[in-house]
Image 1 (cartoon, rainbow, N blue to C red):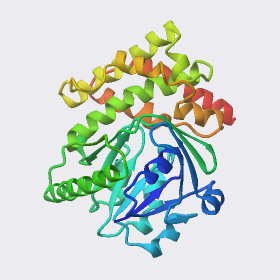
Image 2: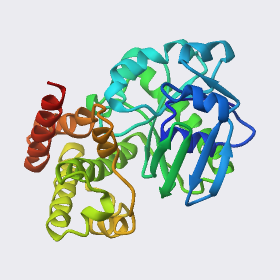
Image 3: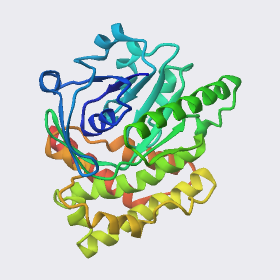
Image 4: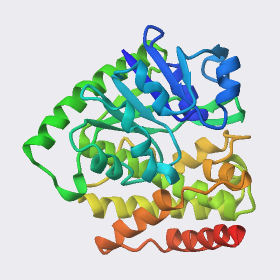
Length: 329
């Protein structure tokens, strides 16, 4: 198997390093290309200890990886604030045998890829890993390894064409292959889902991202572990998660599965997540654009189409959007 990982942040590096050692893995870097190309990646993990990871190939751009194709999987682990161009960025490495895998936050993130690649199977991937790129070629994983996979179908448009059915079949087969690659690399909690259920997983993750990410910035740049120790922030975070979960049930017309962790359980789990900063907080502190559209704006707009309001998310989106605009001015 030949796997190309586009995006050498903490998440991309971690999951690239845990693929089956027999796979040929290429890593597309941007700002950290020189460091990774010269020295590989130093992984500091709570789940597997510290180790050095050297991809089979390191590229400064996806176009440079085209000559080493065809690629069985192209894993996109970039920030969603670049997703509108990411579909074009990977165009040179997507072939007839490729499956695209999107390891990104937010909802409706698959749409630009489906528009750009209408005949390519797509897997939607959701992870709960807490990880940070502490240096250009040093990635730290603090907690959790689980990654959930599912074939992408345009569920919101209720697309049920023959082509869509064929793509679902191909994506489902690819999902099983990719899941095994990670299991062989030590990720024992890879989950395989249907096209609908992976979207429920994605919205469940959204409830966590929207609540913790936005609040961590607005509360004065504090980590998740610190946030849940404050009783007022704890109540606010729980209410944000409940707001998203209630909206999800209306959007999809089904209850959230009972096996999904409750807001209370998620909050208790984050009591131990000391030292970890949300991805949005990391972006804010680094003066990078935050993933406001995918994590806040898109779910707000989709919920509104179904007659659901999310006032807490609306307020946080308005405040963060303004803060980001004022910083750019």
